[in-house]
Amino acid sequence: MKTLLVSLMGILLASCLTGTSWAGSTPDKDLTKQISDILTECKKITPGATRAELLKVFTTEGGISTATRRTFAHRRCPYIKVDVEFTPSGLNQKLLEERPTDTVSKISRPYLEWSI
Image (tube, rainbow, N blue to C red; front, side):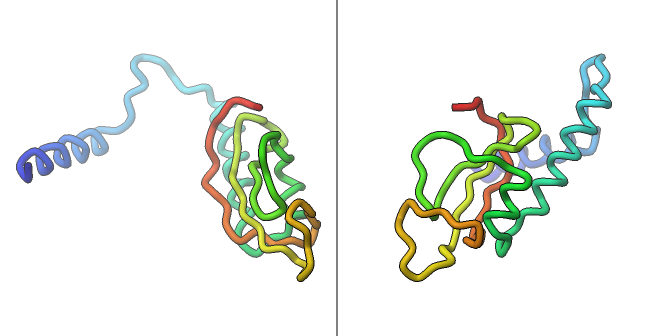
Protein backbone atom coordinates (compact mmCIF):
# COMPACT_ATOMS: atom_id res chain seq x y z
CA MET A 1 0.00 0.00 0.00
CA LYS A 2 2.81 2.40 0.90
CA THR A 3 4.61 1.57 -2.36
CA LEU A 4 1.43 2.25 -4.34
CA LEU A 5 0.96 5.59 -2.60
CA VAL A 6 4.57 6.62 -3.23
CA SER A 7 4.25 5.58 -6.90
CA LEU A 8 1.04 7.58 -7.36
CA MET A 9 2.59 10.63 -5.73
CA GLY A 10 5.59 10.31 -8.06
CA ILE A 11 3.36 10.12 -11.13
CA LEU A 12 1.36 13.14 -9.92
CA LEU A 13 4.53 15.15 -9.29
CA ALA A 14 5.95 14.25 -12.70
CA SER A 15 2.74 15.28 -14.45
CA CYS A 16 2.71 18.60 -12.61
CA LEU A 17 6.30 19.34 -13.55
CA THR A 18 5.74 18.66 -17.24
CA GLY A 19 3.10 21.40 -17.49
CA THR A 20 -0.41 21.45 -18.83
CA SER A 21 -1.15 19.60 -22.03
CA TRP A 22 -3.70 21.32 -24.24
CA ALA A 23 -3.81 18.31 -26.61
CA GLY A 24 -3.07 20.40 -29.68
CA SER A 25 -5.53 23.19 -28.93
CA THR A 26 -4.85 26.64 -27.59
CA PRO A 27 -6.87 28.12 -24.73
CA ASP A 28 -9.33 30.89 -25.54
CA LYS A 29 -7.54 34.00 -24.24
CA ASP A 30 -10.70 36.10 -23.95
CA LEU A 31 -12.58 33.41 -22.00
CA THR A 32 -9.55 32.79 -19.78
CA LYS A 33 -9.33 36.54 -19.01
CA GLN A 34 -13.06 36.76 -18.23
CA ILE A 35 -12.92 33.80 -15.85
CA SER A 36 -9.78 35.18 -14.22
CA ASP A 37 -11.54 38.53 -13.67
CA ILE A 38 -14.58 36.81 -12.14
CA LEU A 39 -12.45 34.67 -9.80
CA THR A 40 -10.52 37.77 -8.71
CA GLU A 41 -13.82 39.53 -8.01
CA CYS A 42 -15.07 36.52 -6.00
CA LYS A 43 -11.98 36.64 -3.77
CA LYS A 44 -12.92 40.15 -2.65
CA ILE A 45 -15.87 38.79 -0.66
CA THR A 46 -14.45 37.43 2.58
CA PRO A 47 -15.78 36.75 6.08
CA GLY A 48 -16.69 40.08 7.66
CA ALA A 49 -18.22 41.52 4.47
CA THR A 50 -21.87 42.53 4.67
CA ARG A 51 -24.74 41.01 2.72
CA ALA A 52 -25.02 44.36 0.87
CA GLU A 53 -21.37 44.11 -0.26
CA LEU A 54 -21.88 40.50 -1.35
CA LEU A 55 -24.93 41.48 -3.42
CA LYS A 56 -22.81 43.89 -5.50
CA VAL A 57 -20.97 40.83 -6.90
CA PHE A 58 -23.53 38.02 -6.55
CA THR A 59 -27.27 37.60 -6.83
CA THR A 60 -29.50 35.19 -4.94
CA GLU A 61 -30.01 31.69 -6.31
CA GLY A 62 -33.29 29.82 -6.02
CA GLY A 63 -33.76 26.88 -3.72
CA ILE A 64 -34.08 26.37 0.00
CA SER A 65 -32.37 29.01 2.13
CA THR A 66 -32.55 30.86 5.42
CA ALA A 67 -31.26 34.23 6.59
CA THR A 68 -28.11 32.49 7.81
CA ARG A 69 -27.38 30.24 4.81
CA ARG A 70 -27.88 30.74 1.06
CA THR A 71 -26.39 29.95 -2.34
CA PHE A 72 -25.49 32.89 -4.57
CA ALA A 73 -24.73 33.10 -8.31
CA HIS A 74 -22.23 35.51 -9.83
CA ARG A 75 -23.90 38.44 -11.60
CA ARG A 76 -21.88 37.99 -14.82
CA CYS A 77 -22.22 34.20 -15.03
CA PRO A 78 -25.09 32.40 -13.27
CA TYR A 79 -23.21 29.08 -13.35
CA ILE A 80 -20.52 30.35 -10.95
CA LYS A 81 -21.83 29.85 -7.41
CA VAL A 82 -20.78 30.25 -3.79
CA ASP A 83 -22.43 28.99 -0.61
CA VAL A 84 -22.50 31.61 2.14
CA GLU A 85 -23.21 31.52 5.85
CA PHE A 86 -24.16 34.73 7.65
CA THR A 87 -24.17 36.08 11.17
CA PRO A 88 -27.46 37.95 11.71
CA SER A 89 -27.05 41.64 12.51
CA GLY A 90 -30.07 41.82 14.83
CA LEU A 91 -30.62 40.06 18.13
CA ASN A 92 -34.29 39.24 17.48
CA GLN A 93 -33.90 38.57 13.76
CA LYS A 94 -36.33 36.00 12.34
CA LEU A 95 -35.14 32.83 10.61
CA LEU A 96 -36.03 34.09 7.13
CA GLU A 97 -35.32 37.79 7.68
CA GLU A 98 -32.32 38.84 5.58
CA ARG A 99 -30.77 42.23 6.32
CA PRO A 100 -28.16 44.17 4.31
CA THR A 101 -26.12 44.50 7.51
CA ASP A 102 -25.82 40.73 8.13
CA THR A 103 -22.16 39.72 7.95
CA VAL A 104 -20.57 36.88 6.02
CA SER A 105 -19.20 34.32 8.47
CA LYS A 106 -18.19 31.69 5.90
CA ILE A 107 -18.00 31.61 2.09
CA SER A 108 -17.20 28.59 -0.06
CA ARG A 109 -14.79 28.52 -2.95
CA PRO A 110 -16.49 29.39 -6.24
CA TYR A 111 -17.83 26.35 -8.09
CA LEU A 112 -19.71 25.61 -11.31
CA GLU A 113 -23.29 24.38 -11.33
CA TRP A 114 -26.32 24.68 -13.61
CA SER A 115 -28.85 27.31 -12.59
CA ILE A 116 -31.94 26.26 -10.66
